[in-house]
Length: 152
Image 1 (tube, rainbow, N blue to C red):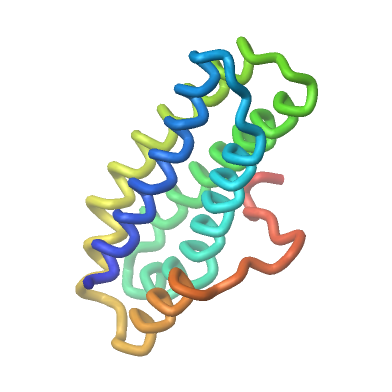
Image 2: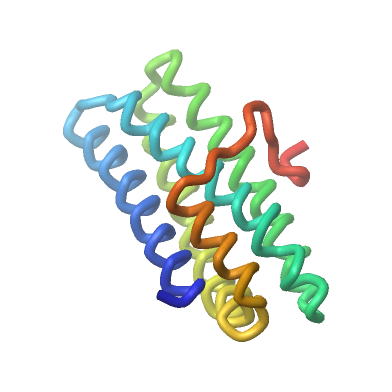
């Protein structure tokens, strides 16, 4: 599979997990474990992009689009933090609102990322870079305590 196909599939899987959490909330169920798994997966996806995908894309002339994606990652990361904090206190109404906000942010972000960055990955990554990306998706672990630079 191409890098874009692999990355887009991960977008779809993460969105589906968040939508399942939101649907559970609507039904009166707070699946904290499901949400935590979704947020962990999204954080790992951001790590993958920022540490493996973006550097070669940035150096191939895509510095401005990568900067935009990283700024949006910071916004998404802060929304994830807010959502995770709400699970602790059980405020389901606010959880629903923040989860919808996160899904909206992801819809806008993913659309741009898939059209610009992922297409550049298909044509601009060297074979070893594409293999590193695929390998990480299959088996890679995000380092403990890593945080998106723009989330600070």
